[in-house]
Every structure is written in structure tokens, then in C-alpha cells.
Length: 383
Image (tube, rainbow, N blue to C red; front, side):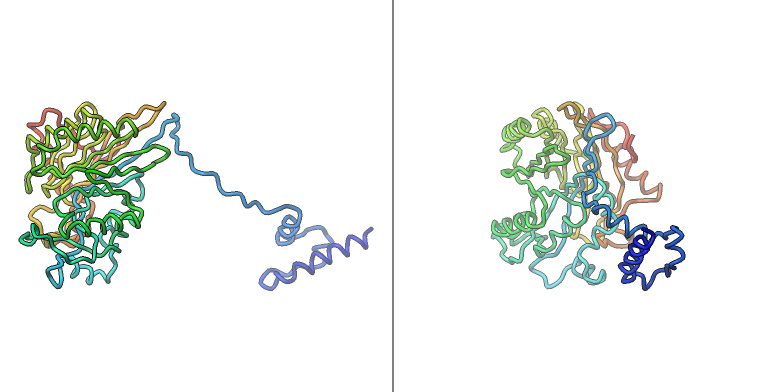
């Protein structure tokens, strides 16, 4: 029996030699003494058991209390590229400085968007190679277009959804509008228009997004918007509505903005997001629902140095428990739309100086004084 055991051990040693060139040499004395080193133990174990190839357990979507918590980020105008009527643009010039990496715009906010469950932008411009200009756009000061490949700026940096109702989405006509929608879809970005609802499933919860261009169209929308929202709310637990409205450079919402925002909530909207003024405007909490009247600019290639480069990222949380959705608070992340103070380099950057942060907070509070349901505080951290 002893000879048989020695033969078996010698056989195992031979099988191991092919893998032992870079490992510690194993002596026969060690084998005979029964003090087999780890390499041999590993080999024996491998022969006796099958390798565990099962996938790691999926991370639970449930909180400790059994609820589902969904974190949403929203920002204002996202405008990249240039004007097809010109040979170059301020954005193209900056892109060259950045080594041609189109993702430079999201360098300082990418981690924020990757950490949430859903990020929404107002995509103001077109993703097209077309240079066609409609007759009603020929005299416009600004026309925005970018290559369709620029859709990756969103999808590869944590942005999952885009509102497409604004006054620049038709800068190059209907075909370019279709190009833009196709580019976003191909990149995996959900979009919404006044006739197309964007639907996303997050942690098993369906979230619907509707968008409307309200400038000079309020009369057409007073009845349409509430009807659309009510219909969406019958199908989806969470309904988010984006409005392109108000007046450029205004820090306060107009009466029409306030009326439309509250109508949306009355109809069933769970969150209202506004943009167009290129300035930040206050937030209301009406019937427990947040109305962000203007999120200002985010990444804005329309100006080399806007007179006000301050803005913020709005974040809110929804909690789903026992089939009921409730609002779980909000916070803002004050930003400057550039990483520089001397010019706009199109890299939104979180503010760090207390004076700059206080300026954003005081602007929001001061311009909300006349709003009946303006929030009292703008928390920078989750409560």
C-alpha cells in the first residue's frame, strides 16, 4: 500500500511540473512527510471539485424598509457643435484644445450622473450632417448642429434622457429633427417630444417623460398638456414633464410659466422641469411636487463668455412603497458652466468656493419671494 501511495503522489507531482517553472520547487521529502504546499493542495482540490461558474448575486434594488428609491438628476440647456453657416465655431476651437475628445464636456460631472438612476438634459440643437436651413430660420442669429456621433457625449457619460422640445431643435428642418432622434436612439438615449412620450424602466419602475415648447404656444397647450399628462399618469407610476418656456435672461418665472407648471401638477405630473431663460429660476413645491422654473444653462456652446455662468444640477428622489410613489426630497449641486472663469470652455464644473455657492443660493431665494409655494431652503446635501 505504501508503494501505491508513493506512486500516486509521484504522478501528481509530475502533473504539476508543467506549472512549476516559476513556483517554489517541491521536494520529495515534503511530499512524503505529508506537508504538501499550497500549490499541491490547490491542484488536488481542483481535481476533486468542479469550478464554480455561477454569476455573482445581483445587487438588490430594495432599501432596508423594502421600498425602491430612484434618484434623478436634471440639468438645463445642453448645446454643442456650431453653426453650419460658419467654417468654424467656438466649440470646435475648444475641441481642438482638448485633443479632439468629445467627452471633455462631461469631465467634471460624469461621476455625478453615473451615480444616479436617471439624468435628463434639455438637448437644444441638432445632431445631423445636413446644412439645409428652413426659410423661417435663415435670419436667426444662432443655428446649432453637431455630428450625429456627438450623441455619445450623453450616453457614455451617464445621461439617459433628453427633452427635445425647444426653439433650436428645428434649426435644420424636419429631416434633421429625425436625424437627431435617430442618433439619440442609436446611442441608447431616450427622448421625448410633444407627440412622443419617452419611457424608461428604472429598478422595475416605469418612468414617463413628456416635453413641450411653450413659447408663443400657451393658448394651444392649456388644454392639451393636462390631458396628455393625465393619460400618461394612468399608465406610468412616475411622470416627468419638461417645458421650454419663459423669457431669456429672466431670473423670475412669468405668470404663464406659473400657471402651466401648476396645471401640470394638478393633472398628475410628479416633477416639472423648465428651461429657456439661460438663467436659473426658483423652485416651487406645489402640492408636494417640485416645479423647477429654470435650470439655466449646462453645457452651452452659444456664447464664449455668458454674463452669468452660474447654474445648478437639480436632484430629487422618488420612493416606491406598496405600489405608492412619494417624493423623498431634493438637493441642488451649484455649478459654473465652465471650468474657467475667464471664458466658457463648455465643461460644467461643481462650485467649491463658498462665495460662489452662496451667490447661487441667494439668487434662487431672492427671486422666489413672490412665489406662493417657493421652497424655503435649497439643501446641498440629502436630508
